[in-house]
Figure 1 (spheres, rainbow, N blue to C red):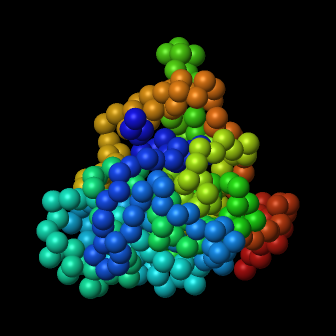
Figure 2: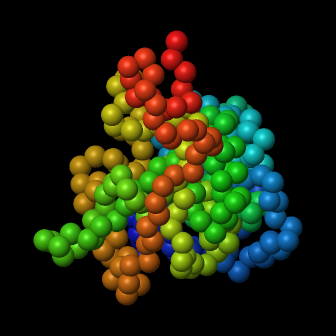
Length: 293
C-alpha cells in the first residue's frame, strides 16, 4: 500500500517494509532489511539530531548543497543524510555532487518519498529531523525546535502545521488549515523519535508547533516570485488537486484504522514571553512593555 506524502506527516507513522538494497556514494553499503540489527536505544545520542532529506531534481543540486551546509553547521546536528531518489541520475553526477556536499548520499531503489521514514541503520541519534529539499531554516530555528522537542519527545514537532476536518456535505475527511488548532505537522520540517520509524505508533498526544526564529526559507512554495522555478521540480506537487488528494488520503487512513487517530493541538511554543497587557502610549494602544520614542 502506498500512502500520500502528507499522510506520513501525521501523529501516526506507519513503518515501511522494503527489500534490501545497497546504496551509497560516500559511505556504506547500508542494509535496510527489516531484520537488520536495531541499535540499542541506550547507545543513541540524545544531544544531537540526524537530518534526513529526500532529493530528486538535479536542478535543485545547488540548493541542496546550501541546505545541507546549513544543517551541518548547526551544533544540534550530528549527521545529514540525503536520500537521492532519482535513479536516472548518472553516477558521475552524484560523485561530483558528493564532493561538495556536507552530507552522506544514499540511493534508494525508487523515487518513493516513504524511504525517509525507514529506520536507517546509519541513524545513531534518538531525534530524527525529516526535511524537504527546498526548506532552509536558520541556526536559531533549528536549535529552538530541537529544544522544544526534547521537552516533548513523544510529540512530532515542526514549523508547518495543517489540520483535518470532517465535511458533512461530502461525508468525507478534508485536509485544511485552521487558525485555532492543528493535527498535522508537515514533512517540510519534522522532528520525531527514531522509534516512530520502527513500528506503528498510536499517539495519544497531538503534534507540537514551534516558532521559527526569523522565519524559514521555503523555496518550493508556489507563491515564490524569485524566478528560480524550484516549486515546479519537486516530487510532491503543490498545485492542482493537492488538498483533495490529501483529504482522500486522510479518509482512507480513517477507513484502514477504523477510527480517526489524529489529535488536535492548540497554541504554539515561542522562545520568549512578553507583556500581553495593553497600555495607551502616544495615543496608541500598545503592549505595556513596548517603548514609544
